[in-house]
Length: 252
View 1 (cartoon, rainbow, N blue to C red):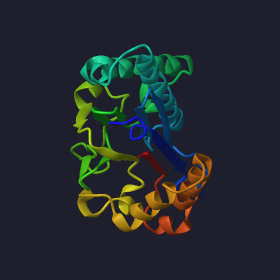
View 2 (view 1 turned 180 degrees about the horizontal axis):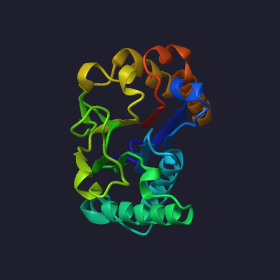
View 3 (view 1 turned 90 degrees about the vertical axis):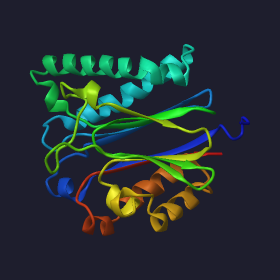
């Protein structure tokens, strides 16, 4: 793997869905990323609609997880170290910090409930980490796709959150092979138009156009603005009323 192949361009946008726009509720999605010595760390968090401070929870978990994992990599941890326990330990620390914030605000941890779908991807090894719904896709050089699917509970519209007592047993890690040309993370609000039927693959008519543009755009800032505009297009309101987050990491 050459240095050129192991550089990343990362684009992301979180936009408020129609259901929240109509009620003047802030976007409850968040995303964050970092690249440390060619290792990509990225995350998308979706705050629970039923939790009163979930947008704060999503923002905190997204920002702090990426910051903490990046710090571990900078201190010499390997991708395998993160997979083998450091990732779960990091999430435990962030969950504990969120619990402290909740106590100080006379709130509960459940008030900050958020899902997590993230990725750590190095030159020759990587993995998805996943709590609840949302979805991750690793695009392979041979044209195949490895998909980390959403996990839902026994009932409709039920999912798992980092605030849940059983979060450790609900945390899923999915190893990713080395031959990756791109990674896509999304909240469940994007899945109706970014994924094909039954979440079997990325929906090519939408994703090919988005990625084709992002591969040629002059700057990440322009790409992020275009991505946000695409997600906020009123035509998406006919498909979903949910908040929408899409993060795309493209290998150069």
